[in-house]
Length: 163
Image (tube, rainbow, N blue to C red; front, top):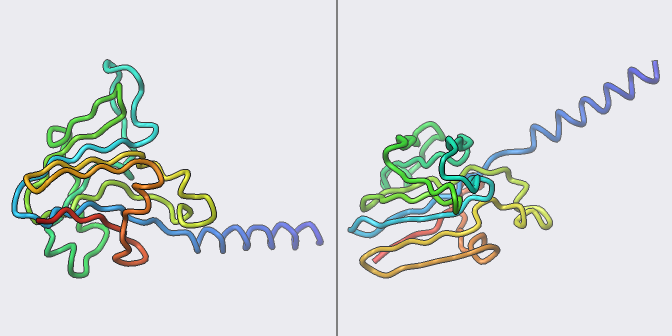
């Protein structure tokens, strides 16, 4: 009986921990009136061989929505995944390169909320981000990149590119 109680307690505790976990979107918002080019490095995407078939987790498939929709309330399934012909992947470097039109939000990654606890940011899989546009270029790496994201909501953090 004690074993059943102990096992039940552990199971309930695990379910409780799972229920408290959630995912967070990290977004780049192009608030400018021109197209921008975005290149970012995700840890683990690069295979070191340009001949291998790319397999990116759904958490890192680039997704977009209009700025107006993103700026108002939206749901997770409002994001539109980009087709493989709409972005380029450099397997040798592990980078993804995309051009996004004006007034568009780009979901770069969906990650666990654990990045906010303790040293979790060290496991933040976005390692570099560079945005090139008519109004200047910005580049962030490592912890500096993580700290650039602003909170929109508990589930969404963003960096803006504007005029």
